[in-house]
Image (cartoon, rainbow, N blue to C red; front, side, top):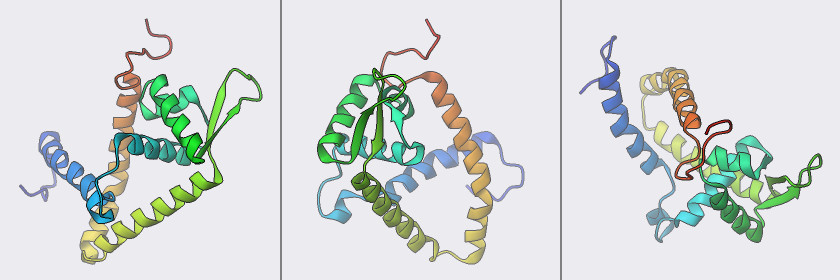
Length: 173
């Protein structure tokens, strides 16, 4: 099915994107096969998600980190604990309220994220150079609409609370 129509339905686009996006995600991430071993465990993926979240947001409270990652407080506590043991994140008391714990990437964590971002960009660039200029231009022109679609998806996700936590959002009963 071609998407060259000027007035494409949301249903048609949804079907195409629901097939394309997971395949793109799978092919663009570093796979275990490329590294010569099994794909990373859920714990490693959770730590990478934490690092990516902190890379974009900077320092967060444990609660804010759990919400940003859409996991429960106990789940984020375990992820942070492993990250502290590995030296990739640091926990500090909030200066305004010592009961609140702030989490941020350490220098080692920032270095790991910088290397991961660099490797990911290089992977995507190697693929993009195989496309002609018209295809690259079309992808570039689609980016603002894809960013808006991502914002809608994030807004909807944020309205539902942490995944699997059984927790309600602030103010809900």
